[in-house]
Length: 562
Figure 1 (cartoon, rainbow, N blue to C red):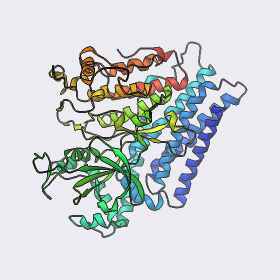
Figure 2: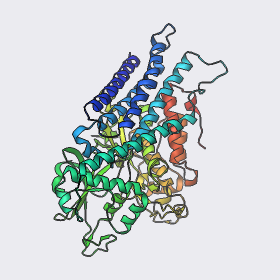
Figure 3: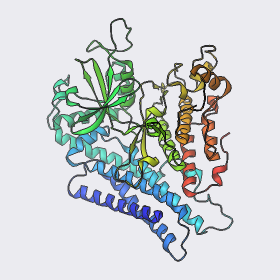
Figure 4: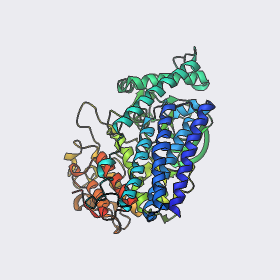
């Protein structure tokens, strides 16, 4: 009985989380996010356990109901509990607390806790709504959506939960700062940091983390000043000799990627070449070293220094190898990109609808954060090259029952080399035409040699909407497993003309639920003004996901986006 299996697995995972937290406190291993971890465990051990008790009573009690509606919802709850357990384990890091703090951008990972707390609440709501509908607890006049409604799918914590999280986060940062000050003692990094970069003692790491905390507290103004002076703000600099080289992982849009190790932890290292000064006109220069920087590297560094979200790639540090003429970014190590996951060794992987929608939601939440409509970012960031190759995935840890091949993955948006910051003080930003991979590009930025001005009028006004279009193309890949327009037998030039002039779009499976089709079609509208925002997309996808988990087929047949 799969439903009961995942119910018991969820209970065991909650017990592990409770024990992990208690062990971390007793053995002084809980070094980071102590109060935020307690909030998560408290919600799991009270609210979630109560929901599981109600589900068990519904399945095994005297008025037992059908098991089928519960299976997917219990599987989803188990996934959420596993994510919560992973977050708690990372915080109970013992002697590794400094490197984990660096990975978390000086402990600045409140987004992870906000997402987990919301998903615990939301997945419990799904199960409660199934219980109420199957046992007919409500009057005949009520509908299935009395408890589960789109309004509860906005991804926002309730006011009291949000207050408790912000308070816990503030106190955790204060405790973290106190621990760093105790460890730093009298250490002061030299002005050039050359000695500190090469020989990083715990005191030096603590000193640099304190400096990063000060920069985070100062807000965006300090980062802007650093950009103006051509400095690399907030991001950790390490000596390239300390980055142990591992196997080749492939190539990104602007550099090759290798596996590496730093301070004993595995990472991915993205290597960029410097600009060749001979015969080139450089666009960025570091006046301290009179070296010309690869503009893609500068762009990625500028964009990544303040980003910390569970669905956006986390960059840990950077290095410069003057002998080789390269600079590198060190990032979280993932299993591969979404394109490779969907299409590997000539085989196309077609996901079940709940898994496909779950991945869509993760990607959408990452881009929503980048656009500045999530917590934490005050500046909107347009990706401009969103595609399956720029979405990295990783299997869930500690949950072999949630199969990687079935799409139970963590997804992260990456590769911001072509992204642009939208000026906070103005409504519009400059868009460059013909940037990005053409099959995913919005019609308004595809350069058509025969009529290059066809779509140019609307680009500057709605820069964020180009990502909405690209996202819709990625959604088609998740539903079919195939490359966009795989069935079309046209040259690239003719294909682009069909896209821009005749509204050609990828084919969606006939079995795809009507409500999801409606959303995707709205995202790839020709007119960018008619495309939804990522806040709207996330809310609708979460509602669709909930309807799928509940088995509400009738509501999935509705059109809602016009």
